[in-house]
Length: 291
Image (cartoon, rainbow, N blue to C red; front, side):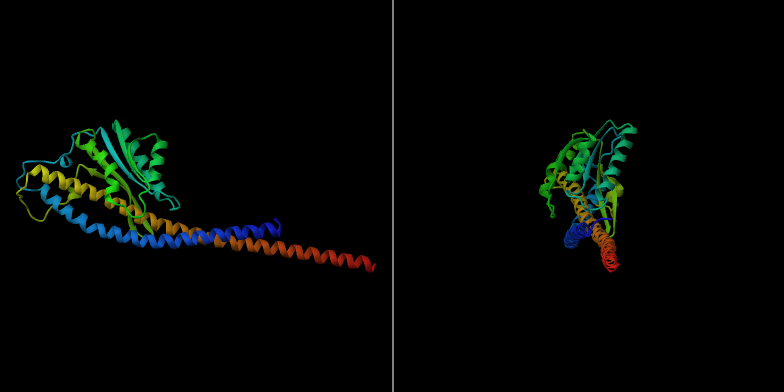
């Protein structure tokens, strides 16, 4: 059995760790509320521009069809936007989405896809894809707790330009969708071409007059719509990150408390054994002197 001094040192070390995890839990709870507010604030814009894009895609008369709406007859080259966190200590959040992304890439490889271009948003995903040997064409890390669209435009544009140039047949996005504080869902969705399911069907038919011309208007609208989808994915992932980190740190704090109780029990047993030994030595010495 370890000595009392060593056990006291272990107890103090675990107590310090518990203080850190408790502080991280409280910080994550505060950031989670702010991340959820940003996520919910982005939804009205995404929904409004989705309706506009749906109306435009179902317009009665148009002299221009955007490449984002054209479905290819065969899929040989695929783009994948992977959204993960920059930091760890958030449970299995990154592990789940990266495991799903790797399984999807293997499935593509088995179905005849000859090339997968990857764009990474987040340090954890970037490191994983580099170790995996994937073709990473763009990346962005350390975007902070408040994402801005101007930060994301660079890596996003690489994939979107490749799709418009015909270098990619499909583009998918992988992120963790926020369900509630205790539940997050790893999803990989088809981003391009924009499907009818994602756009939805407008309630009534619309026709438009374009100014200055259909190409300029549709190009700008579709680009803004796809950017809004990716930004929504980033905000969902950030809300999921803080929720998962809060839960993970709470579990770590609770586990530290259990370890401290076990160590205190061991310490008490060791102390009792030492006291019993000392009493036995005193009694034995007294008996020897008396004899």
